[in-house]
Amino acid sequence: MAKVWNVFVFLLLVLAGGHAAEGPIGGSCVGTRCDVIHQQSGDFASAHKRCKEQNGHLASVRSAASLDRLSALLGNVSGSFWVGLQSPSGCPDVTSALRGYEWPTNESKSVSDTLDRSCISPSCVTVSAEGGFQWEQEACDAPVSGFVCTHNFSYACTRLADGDVRYDTPLGFGGEELLSLPPGSTATRMPSERKFVCFSKKWLPAPWSCEIFQGGCEHACVHAGPDRKPSCFCPPGLSVDPLNKVTCTKDPDDPCARLGCEHACVEESCTCTHGFRLAPDGRTCVDFNECSDARQCPGENFRCIDSPGGFKCACADGFKLTGGTCADQDECASAPCEHMCHNTAGSYLCLCYEGYVLRGNSCTLHCGKEECPAECDPNNRYQCACADGYIAEEREQHTVCIDIDECAFSYCDQLCRNTFGSFTCSCRPGFTLTKEVFCARSEDEDEDWDGSGQSTAGPDRHVTPPPAPTRRPSTLSPGGLAAILVCCTLAVVLLVLLVHLVCCKRSRVERDLVMEAAGAEAADSRKMEADA
Image (cartoon, rainbow, N blue to C red):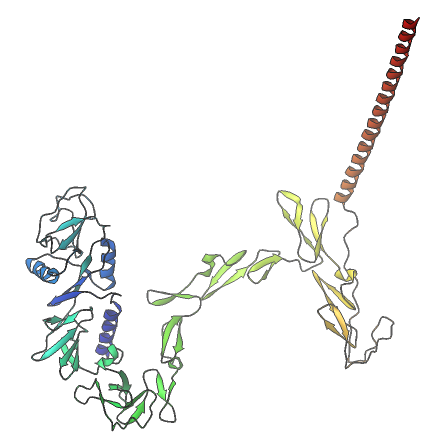
């Protein structure tokens, strides 16, 4: 029975989850079929999607009886409503029964044959009271007043015998005149307000499972007792009606009122709602960590996440829910690494090419010894890069990176030890290293440095003397020598050009002066002749 009830719980949750944000304006059920009217404007595609989200499909009207039911539903409603008839090809198919039109159930019967079958005619169909419930062709992208959904079930419950009963279906409509009710429908008998739920063709009395509509309880529901039987409870000052077992009535002599229960009181004792347990004081409730039970979330790569009053199952980091299972997510597909990426179960590893070292997800040049080949541009061998702490040196056929002896630049306040690509500072006894390079006198140490350049620390102290500096690069490389020769040649050429320009200018000036003097002398001669 427990297994059957679990199936029922799942079914009701699915139906409850399928409710639209805006409820239907009406509906009716005959046998195991229910037709529901939704007055929500939209095109054919959106109507088809809404019906599918609610585990149904656009209405199929294939018989005179189904057309009569549709006419009764829409008789007092104005506007046009989509039904499931559609021509996906756009042109008539003379070989098919409906000449290219199809129902969502792929059946070929129809109660009307008034459609225009030309290629340019609209491909979707509506019905309306104004149109006498005849097929009316409409452009599929046109917004109409609403749509009609059809839902089919494996069984149904008949109405309760005798009495005044109000019915509510999980499809969002209800009433007192319904003849057939789908699974999950509730019935409330008046005036006693006893409630029932439709399950396996029978009406089960409330309270039922607390996970479904609060078990039919007016206030709240709790699984109490050793057998976890569902029971209704009411706030202080009210008690559960003994006749219908779901509603709350005033009770001035309620024994639960004096107990001060935090959550619920059942049979004059405090109890807690699902996901909580009773504290030692017998009144308050504390959260119970359901994830402490290893049986929760048993699937591979699932993890349990506790929450107040409940829990949820989720995939472990690096996994994604696919088809009900947690599948490994290939993080390398998003290229998180700079060089190479290796996917692993639930994670990934970044790898670097030779000559590089991984720092975070990035790869940086790395040498790790005194000398390494430089990383040069294949199109320009003089455009090279070295790892931090190295300097490039050009040689005859290639360029190498040589470790820089940072200790030669007095970066450290006192003692310095050169390392490949870096350096480390240290202090003499009686001093403490600060900010990686400075030495501050220690207050709890006596100065024992004798000025000789060596530590006078006792045998329990050891100071490593500064090592010999790493070989420095040569002062002048072949490339540098070539550059100097080129510069000297250019300087000589420029000097020759300058001397030539100065000499030319001086000659030009002297020639102009001679010509000017000769002209003046000739003018004086002509004047003297004229005077004579």
